[in-house]
Length: 209
Image 1 (spheres, rainbow, N blue to C red):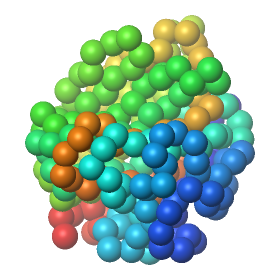
Image 2: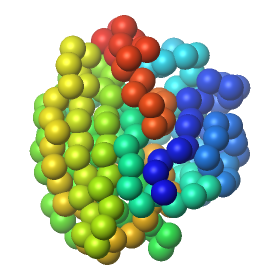
Image 3: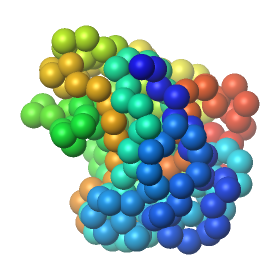
């Protein structure tokens, strides 16, 4: 099935993201992961609408949410931002039913937005700036050996597509994990997850503020 889940965080009160259950296409609330109480809803740095998520710890942490229906192929979008492009990393991971990492997209400490998947080294896609929102388009191509096309909007135009092999099991995506990796002083931000291109409606918000 194609991607149908939508989450924009706008209906949530400021504070801990855990146990919030808004949006559509999800089978459970945000939770699980490790140290999940450090992901906060806030209204200061947002890509679209009124709210987005900020990670407020200096250690590794994750938070998860399961999809109502597994995704075998399809296209979706999400937005990420980091206060540093040289310290730590933030990511969004897409997993199958046995929690194996199909693939993830991360803003890394080497200054690149990177793609990686289970058992493989990360691949540099493009450089990024600190304190700027980036919209990631994922086109997940199912089959016995899954691949993904990634495009990245930098505030001016789309970059890519970057065609990458993913998880060679043919597994479907059933879970999304939001995470911060490595210690250090920086803030990570996440906003809208949607099957509809958000750049069309919200492109002014993508630039540095």
